[in-house]
Length: 481
Ligand SMILES: Cc1cc2nc3c(=O)[nH]c(=O)nc-3n(C[C@H](O)[C@H](O)[C@H](O)COP(=O)(O)OP(=O)(O)OC[C@H]3O[C@@H](n4cnc5c(N)ncnc54)[C@H](O)[C@@H]3O)c2cc1C
Image 1 (cartoon, rainbow, N blue to C red):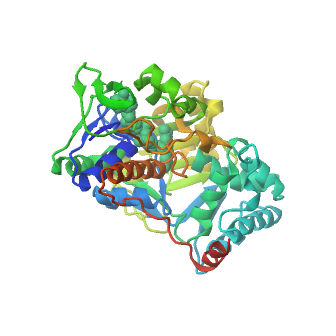
Image 2: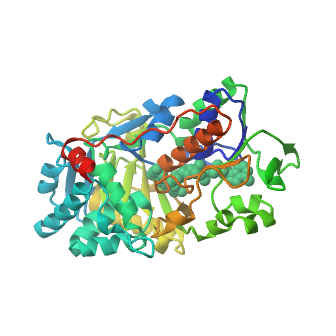
Image 3: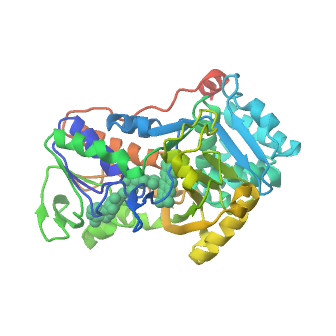
């Protein structure tokens, strides 16, 4: 078997096929694994992620994949979510003693950064989602879906509720603005993450550079006689009639296999196929209808400790998340309630923060210097120590096509993992998984592609993990809907 692309989709399909006993050759164009969820060395010697990546408790397949490759203990889960507004006021959301979907009701009621009118409106809309088992009847129309913003307006949400609650969670989870999100995706985030179970919302953060999470993949593939080749870009597929007969590498060599999985992104795949195939098969030409949206990561190194929390979510700011990388990657003991017990030697010398801004359309044309200045200005109110700290170094990484946009109707352009060409299977967060463009979606696609091949050769095996089962009242409502 040949897998093209060493992102999470390619890696998870390759590991699954290897576990099923097959010899897999994985061809990755870049010098490192991980694709859009990767890390690399800066000229100064720091090992940084292209952008902070987080997972949630409800991402059951990503968790399964990390377990298979021995990386599960490198993810630290936090049950306490900390929010801050530009004046520096803090608010917390976390699960209390009540069963789902009421587990966060107490901290929500006490949350100081929302008004009562906002809270009542939010509670009504959340109840509508929970009582429908995550499938409200009013989320589709003939044109292929309503936007999240339209759904929220229909459910009487105040401006404050939209700006300080729905937008804060959904823009980061789906990397898109509310008026461009299919309500089905937005509602799914709340159902799976916050309402159906008590643990779905817990935020998982790698405590090593992303690249280290994939070390076990190479071993899993090698154990079955396969191999992972880096700097091994593929120029194109060879197709005879309708059958894929080989892949041509960028160095001109030809590789052949019984089955091929393409795990490159949707904008690259059509260019790897002969033009007559993409013209003949609409599933390939239609991929251009999947739009993408940007994410901007801002990396800041200060000369002293400026932040004590492991991470913060900001309201009413351009900056959406601030990650305290020194503490998250260091040896400091982080307590489960999100507090930091002690400063490390590294923190005493300085601190590295990583800021994330999703759907960052406005930042794309702006200079890196302008972006850094704007973010630091915002942080001064939230982290007052920054006022007296010196910025030692700053860098901005703009990923202009970070994820595909979950626009209303976008599901119609997402093909299943079995392609119309015999021998060719597709993986990638953009293939049809039911999930948005996330690490979880990528792993689901990889497992589904591996399952499709194994079924075709008469050795069916299941890798796809089920969602967390709904609990408490949510379970009763889900079974009735
Ligand atoms: C800045 C940013 C922040 C994000 N934050 C999060 C987050 O917090 N949580 C989350 O769940 N998701 C997040 N995502 C989304 C997540 O990273 C992606 O959904 C996921 O990594 C996609 O994996 P993939 O394998 O489908 O595609 P990719 O990661 O794009 O993998 C495709 C691979 O194919 C390789 N390739 C391309 N062309 C060729 C060729 N010709 N020959 C051989 N190889 C080739 C590429 O080099 C790449 O390694 C983020 C994405 C970005 C960009």
